[in-house]
Length: 300
Image 1 (spheres, one colour):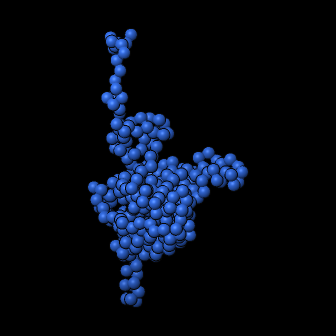
Image 2: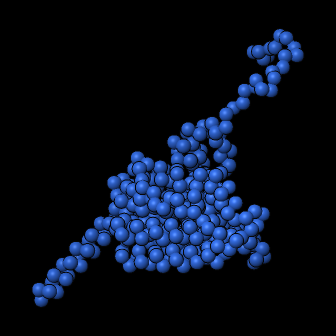
Image 3: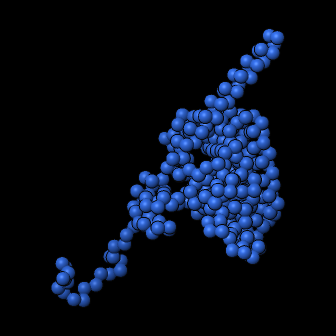
């Protein structure tokens, strides 16, 4: 028997007086359907409290997770795309850029910054999927190239966080040129013995996968991230065969040797800090041995 029974019939609440639950209070996991508060979801760094599903997040969240006290200096923050090809699809490219900037609050699909991670200096470039699918245009390539130059100048490790649908079609060949430019800059970083870690998040595809995302000294990924060049549907239509279960997931890619390890977002900062600490210690050891060898050579 119900504990509450309406005595008077025909009572109606006007629409304008009805109370609605405010948006943004709850999070429903798309994987296991568990519902939790957004406060709890943020506390677990945007991972499901039950199944550990890693929700897509952007540069704001990654910077807050990685940089000590969320303190960092952003690089080239006002750089925006031009329209070298006068491209128009359903709308002119400049209009699309303006609308996307207004909607997302981002200038382009990557943000670059430097700061400290557990007291160690670090330069980070982080992509945002919310900006035209994280597509790689000329601004993305230029900002990453400049971030690498900053890492070289200041002798810091470089972390690339990729999240992209691939090259930006509105810039055609200009977009594809960024693959070569960023790869060349990373080669200079390697020559100077500075660590480069590439973190692949969901999704990382297309020209980004075919260039800087897979060129790390360590290539790592978040659990369940989609990683590949062409999408599963395109591959299936091309080869005419069913694909293996979990094809192009981070776990599948790790099993086939294209990743070094998978790291949970809640452990990301400490794992990166430990890794950079080990690499820095090895660099110092090599430097000391090199100096000793030169000194011995001169003495003899």
